[in-house]
Length: 254
Image (tube, rainbow, N blue to C red; front, side, top):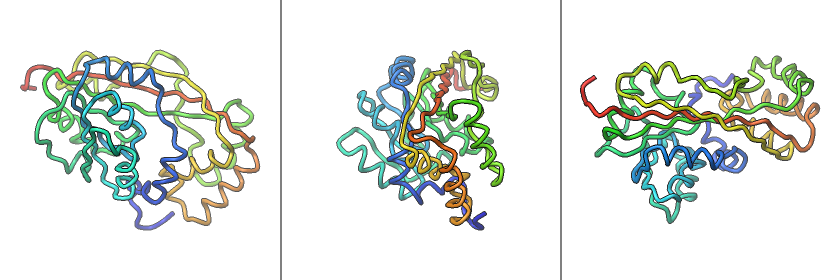
């Protein structure tokens, strides 16, 4: 493992590759998220290179995008040129909102926020009745045999083979969010889809994930080469995207 790396901040090492090979999100997700409270202003936590930012801003929402990594923010700035997006080089923990927004959302990054303060800080950024939206992609290789072959390689490097996979289409409310007095009117949706990409792009996608970035370069190259030997070309992934929605309660007393 690489000694002094901060896992939450390794994505900037491969910012352009991240933007090229990481998946986006289903169009239906944005329809549901923006139809839930019809926002005109939004705060995005961990915008990355703008995989979600571009779509939200293109729907007429003015977005303030938080991104603490300079390399990721540089790509983000290029992607949102001409859209109503302001970029702040900040994390949720370091940003102090000047005024409340209609929507706070986070794509693929909420697990990097401080669990002690994240709910109170998101609530503080929202106007009463405003909405919170958290969403992320999960992916896995198709077929038990292929998954087992890939898992055997990943086990050598103590890596999880893929995201925890939802077997049911009925998502349960997030227990942490549902237990917060600042939020109510919980809703959750699951979107299933497929993504096909060349084998080399799939390997590049893996190499942008934080657990792979934390490996020594030599170990990562060796791992990817072993996976190259068991994967088909192209690779078709099973995808599932989870969306959790909630509204900030009207009262400011919790």
